Amino acid sequence: MLWTKYIRASVVALMVCLVVGCRRQPEQLTVELPSRDIVADGNSVVRLPIAGARNAEELKVHVASENGHGSARVIASPPAVEYRAGVIPGDAKLVISGVGVKTAEVTLHVQPEYSDRFADGTPDFLRLDSANDRQAFRRWFTAIAEHEATVPKLPEEIKDCAALLRFSYREAMRMHDSTWANDFGFGEHAAMADIAKYRYPHTPLGPRLFRTGAGRFAAADLTDGTFAEFADAHTLWMANTHFVTRDVHRAQPGDLFFYRQFEQHSPYHSMIFLGHGDGGAGEDFVVYHTGPDGKWPGEMRRVTVESLMKHPDARWHPVPGNKNFLGVYRWNVLREAQ
Image (tube, rainbow, N blue to C red):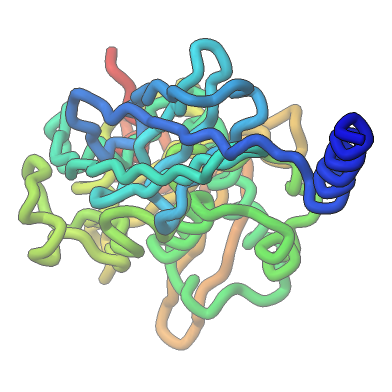
């Protein structure tokens, strides 16, 4: 009789397990906080060891804070969360979850970054430190500028050479998803990689990408109007780029030609060096907006460097002997240590 009762009790217990589910208690994860400061420079990486997980390979992590607060991934052996800082300081909340574990949250305090290692006025958090990011910027910057030379109607903001630079620069730093591609008609460039360090407009500067004054970058520049969404050709040349060469044969795609024409009302002029452009081979090209002239609103032009060398007005020849040609310049965000 006792044996029968034991069997019945076991069957009932088994049925309860089948109906309700015989599950072990969720594992409690413990995540170790970093012992050093994390700086919002887009590059700093820290590993946070995880304890309490039987199978770290099944864990996943995401950054629950807003865009620009970095990225994270799980390392299986030894179990850890690897966090890469973004460029926006403040609290970055990491959420770690997985099957059979209690979801864990940890908040990292990311410090502001105020360095300017080249003393050119550009904060290091904006610089594209990796070769992949620099290449991604060059490809998008030139592709966007060249595209605007082919469309029947320009965006309303592109009214002169500086506006073309600002527009192409800003759009090159966005995330180029399907919505962006459809809006701008860029389906053929969908496979090109984006910049990984950050995505406009999620920077400590927000949309204010262009420096408007000279001098080394300092913390106060983030709030005193030193950066703006607008900058004319002179300001782009003076405060946002650096000199590379006067030999156009040493230019790289995405570099800029700057001129100073004293005879004109707006003496500073810029062109974007495309290299071979979308053609992929043959002659090198530049693209630029002529700017308005009286009642004429100006237009986009895409011409070869060779034809520019033979321009009927020698003031536009991109050669060392032309005093009006300031030289080949490069965006400060592309600057590399020598």
